[in-house]
Image (cartoon, rainbow, N blue to C red):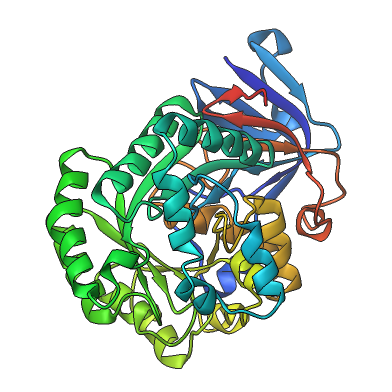
Length: 415
């Protein structure tokens, strides 16, 4: 057999195969097992239990990890990122500090349009190299699966360029990677005042080519104030459905946009951001199988109001947390920090943030059958912590890296 991890202080996040996600009060439940072992065989979780029940000798394994004093977690699943980009936007950081809003910076040609200009001038090879550095960083901090969006292209050629880079990352990285086509991320300068013409381009030229080359798993739209309307979002998602592409929506970050409801209408896998979420939005989500996903890093970095996480969970909703790793509004892919923000800013319990960054975010990527929990038969995407007193320490000790060893696809990763 491949790997024995023994003397584990605590196995965290044990779940049955039938669990797709957890919602409401169930998010407070986090099953653990103390003084445990776990066996990895052929890339999968083969067996686990208490040390006193271990029936194999050490010489039965190719690798042995002595995890004394450490906890074993399922790897983080980051279900919303934009980590393929050409350059940073720290100049805009000063504008934000001076009080300019996200919308004001965008109107001046900054924001997404700034990233689009940089990306246009950057080759696929360089984009790949830059993204691979970021991939290695997030692996070192415990992420085992990541969704990556396009959306900094905003032309047919540059959107395809981004998506081809994402495909290469999927082929050459140990991470599980899902690709999302986000052509409707912003309106290019050439289409100012002609927004419906740009939607025509997305629907009639971009989507067919993306589907022809099989470059995306999902489609996304920035349905919000100052970006794309409900009607435009409807049109794009209707067209995407004809190509078998399920939706994931940027919704209600800047105002009550109707983005949550249009996402539910189209059976979106997730609706993300959600700073403006009221009773009507919560009721809509309660009747759906759409995963509400909060992006704490973006709200923190932009100084936005916080999504009502506590109200949503107390109403019985599931909740996922993701990083929104991007150069303009959340320049960090550290999911440990996102978990800490969930507790500190959003008043979520440690159990809730661990579920929100593993099993629920796996559902938001459509990979809940593969990863997100300690379950026999699931892919062995795990991390061994540095010695820590309990799983509460993971979000409590914010800012430092608490990962000691990373296992992805049943292999110990060197980074």
